[in-house]
Length: 304
Image 1 (cartoon, rainbow, N blue to C red):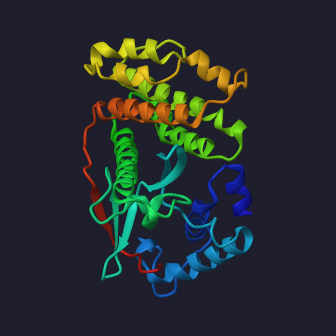
Image 2: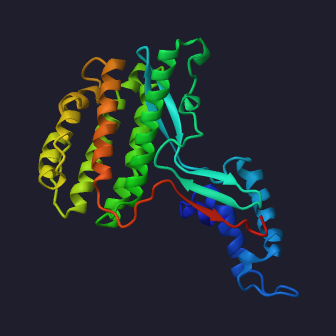
């Protein structure tokens, strides 16, 4: 009954076990022998409620879906003209010796990380010449740095409203979708990649304008939006990125199949320019706090 209620409320499956266990304690348990329900999340006996709930959810949905996943983003990398997807973790966790957990929000590739190992179906790196391998690693590092920094900036920016915050929260997802479309073996899917990049850029500029209190027009024209933002942006290099992004009309023709699909080289050029444009705008949004690889140590729950 609880799960049916959660489903109607559109709650994600990974959030339901904990909420269900809390609901049972709050509303169905009258008394705890030898203890109270006060501050029950710090009590070991909560496991006798939580663990059976988790097992029930695993039986219904499988062992993966009921457990939360760390957010990730897919970036695009070019190698000898072929496009590869790069899976970048946006939140990192590490179990300490005492069983507690470090949760880190990186804004860049950390020293111990190897971004080339994040490539999906990568080329045989050991067979590449040193300069080629170094170039592939550097491209992977640059894309991963941009994705992490952009995500960090958009998350911590002082958005003007809940609507603006919701819009900003979808920007990295558009980049993610663009990568999956661009690396698809289906030619029709590739035609959608430029549109996803267009939307990511458009939403970024509009989020910036909203933050500045500027009422922007209902348009997909990136150049018009950028011109509106320039007096407050003070970033003339934005025009350089825009010069490598196709016009809105061309992107729309690709989207609706009104012209031949873009080449992989065109998609890669637009991706690189879009990532730079988005990163430039996102990092210039005012924020109260700046998290530079911020990490927090979370105490292990006694019932976990």
